[in-house]
Image (cartoon, rainbow, N blue to C red; front, side):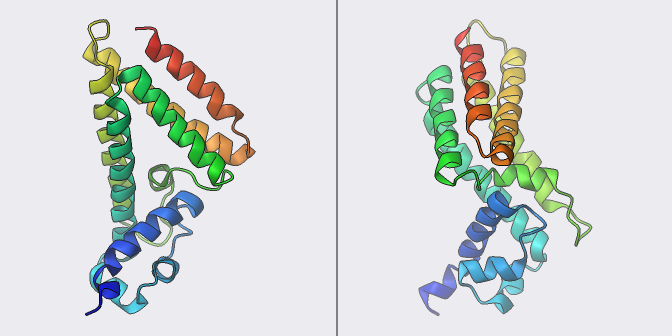
Length: 191
């Protein structure tokens, strides 16, 4: 078996994450994901017996883990500086993609699948958001901020960034993101 075939499942999941970020959950077909991954379509169901929902759930988890890794790295600089670094990464992603790529986790969270009853991708998105909240909350919990305050702030940061990303994509303008980032940085720096 060639190396090209052995990494097909990983390529499929990565391609699905990219499609989620750009086109959303319902527009991400297994056939198109396999094509973009340069993986044999027939073997896709062998590796993913749960079909599209399994592929998209794994893609959501993969995308969430990648963002979590970036977030963890950014937060090594401290809460306020780490948040600034993380926001800069998102800003760059929006601009670099000309506002076409958003957050695959948000796409999985907000779209109801039209072609399947189980919603594995939505459950995966919920788990990712909880992971990000925990990571941010831990970094924001300081002497001046209780765990409850840090958790609430972490929730607001995630919701604000996700909303700003969606607004920027719709408006094809970085302005909403910059305004939200400025407010979030101010809130985190206040403590």
